[in-house]
Image 1 (spheres, rainbow, N blue to C red):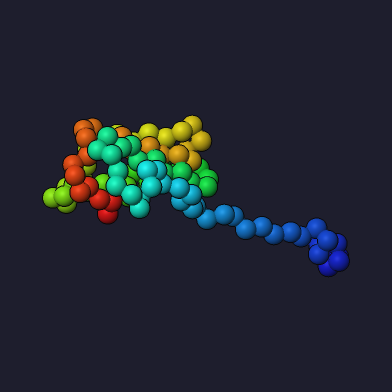
Image 2: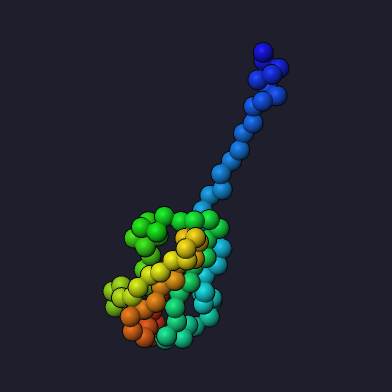
Length: 91
């Protein structure tokens, strides 16, 4: 019985969520009309990502805008409501 159980047992590991890319690149200055695009390695919990996402203006206030997802919930795009203020950062 143990031999049969050993032959039929198997295991697996699930992948952890990973941020694959950010556009525009974070190492270079962004245009004032930039949309921020985050690409993930697997479908994400949209509510969780949106609750933890933000861009801050130079005063430390959140930049207003809208988020949208691809149908697969692997790419999140944030579109600011207005031009980004100069010196906007991500928290």
